[in-house]
Length: 214
Image (cartoon, rainbow, N blue to C red; front, top):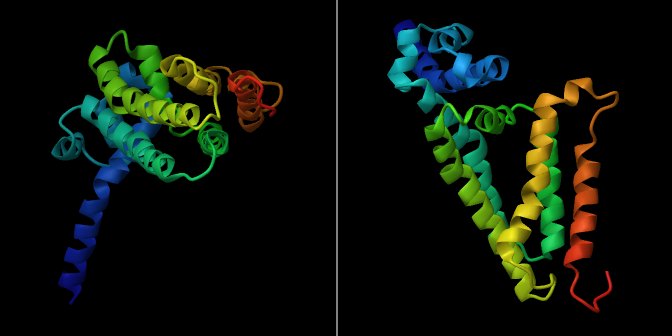
């Protein structure tokens, strides 16, 4: 019986190990950035040997990619599904979307991933290409579909969808940069939710069809 319990405990521990390694990697990347982080640092933070990490991830780049897929990719998939099925207006959906993103940015854990791409992509173009395909392309495709639907319904005046999409998401990039670079110097906390609400107010006033009241 005791041997059986030991085997089950070891099996559970082994199954949990990739998640523990990824949690450690997120912390190390946040502290050191991508270039300065070493697999040995991640192993030490996770409480495993460096060799153990290589059983699950062949390189530091693959650790980063897995983090992006799990922490951003899965969220994008969920948001895209909700967007496709959402029965309300574009503005109502975007209000919900920005509320969710504002909370993610305020907490700060996941923002280290886009920050790495913004700050270190010149030295790691393969990671930038991966992030473009895995996050940017998927996210803009999802948002473009929402914007185009709003124009087809007459909720938004017709403008180039690609340009409107970039205008919609631009404050997200600004907020991530601010959160990871300047927020610690703010005399009072940055109110991301208020900022996004103001953005939507200005955006939808500009996108209002001619002759249509707000």
